[in-house]
Image (cartoon, rainbow, N blue to C red; front, side, top):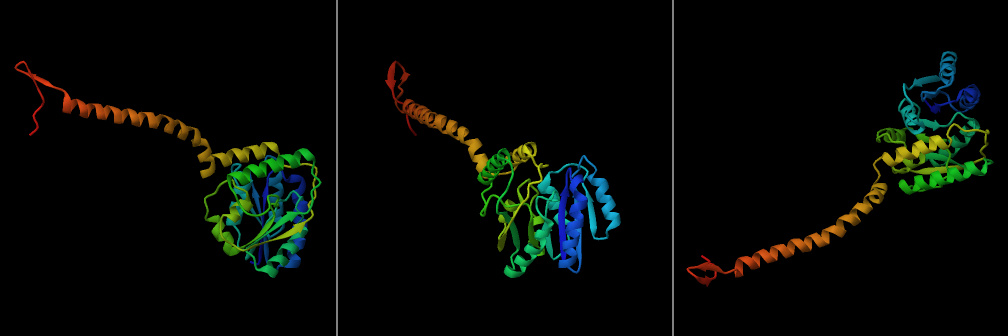
Length: 274
């Protein structure tokens, strides 16, 4: 298999058929063999029904149906685990990221032989509250899990089969794909793209807050150091006086044993040492 395209479904019914038509048209021009993997992340709308219809109509479509909502990032990792292509493209199906970027990603990968090629938007026309919320989220995410590269990478990226094999072996955690990719040594490159805002998003404030809460529960040395810092202060504040008290008691006991007189027959004598 030359090419695998992975996308997740969550409230994706309005965009799914158009996404499939456009990504299929691109893939037919660029690869001799390809597959389109649709991962249903327990979407509450009709995305599952549409995906099943596409699966029946198009032999290139593989449908993965999750029984519960795992979150976007983990659903992507599950989809990558089902791929068989030499090159794997991960892309959201909400049409903010354009299916026509596919030829740009493949061209950059052939030029650089990179394991990962990611997209950086040149400019975005999203509303100010959305942009501010996104900046805050990515700043907090970058503080918890530092990684090189720009913070405004899109979800769309091309990864090689050998790198995908390393990626899926990692413990599944709700980390952003750019953070997961940066955790492993690899050669990477980027392309600049023009992104379109479709007017709404399925990854709004509530889902970002949920993801950030999951991040706090993941094993992270930095957040644990912050949470444990007050306890460390409390420990050392009490440890120093406590250690002094122990030394003082120990010294008093030794002094008492050496110097305390004993009465024998009305005379004061020191204890004999054998």
